[in-house]
Figure 1 (cartoon, protein in one colour):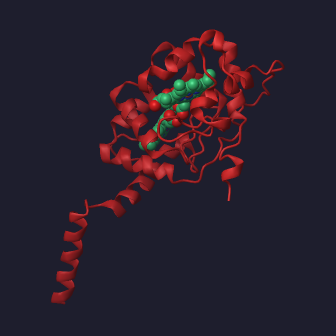
Figure 2 (cartoon, helix red, strand yellow; figure 1 turned 90 degrees about the vertical axis):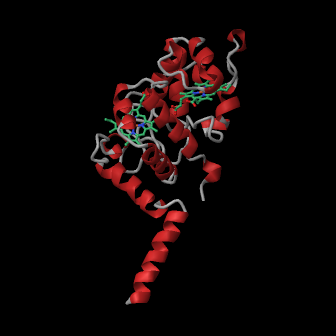
Figure 3 (cartoon, protein in one colour; figure 1 turned 180 degrees about the vertical axis):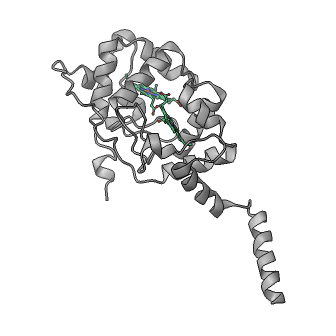
Length: 224
Ligand code: HEC
Ligand code: HEC
């Protein structure tokens, strides 16, 4: 009896020394994703879907399988306002820093998926292959590099800085390009996306967004 109590105590002390609540934290993220945190953050999955795949019609992005540091940076940016979105400001501000971190890790560990119907309900006609040209070659007359140079081949994403565009909904991608262009999203390192977005017209944006939405994610070669 006495030994048991001592053991419980030792486990608690060890947990505290190790930074406390790591196993509990993972649990918390799953609970918040499904039920909210009871302090103003809504269940993430109502908008981002139970598998983290997002919803094309609402412009709700896929979070599953994205880089944890990238996701956390976005949550911080919503809270601080360098990424201006009223819906996500409410969510991110209602989360503690530890909760934002735990949720970023939680979604990054979910199996990568493409958003269902990422291209939208009506097929996008691009007979001149404008989207593919911008993605793979860029437009040097306007100093726009190929998107793939930073976002990886087929837009699969590169590390924490360059998020995947493949399989993300066209709706969402186009909205982000417009947000970078207007400056309502200005959390990109060194303003890398701002100049690019400002150099594209509406038709360019729609075309390139649809091209990336149609690319496979996870990329075929990384599938088991
Ligand atoms: C009411 C709907 C709604 C809820 C609930 C919601 N989100 Fe969002 N989320 C959005 C929308 C809309 C966007 C896109 C915002 C924009 O256009 O900048 C977004 C974007 C994001 C992004 C940026 C993704 C990227 O690729 O840059 C992250 C991260 C995120 N949400 C995490 C969460 C988490 C974590 C929760 C739960 C605590 C949550 N969201 C709850 C609607 C929602
Ligand atoms: C010089 C590097 C670079 C090039 C070239 C580039 N991007 Fe980006 N892009 C970035 C960075 C960095 C971010 C992440 C910004 C952040 O941290 O919020 C980003 C973010 C994005 C996002 C937001 C993704 C999300 O999940 O919210 C979209 C959409 C995007 N880029 C589209 C494009 C398109 C389309 C092109 C080609 C026309 C392109 N990018 C070319 C660097 C680049």
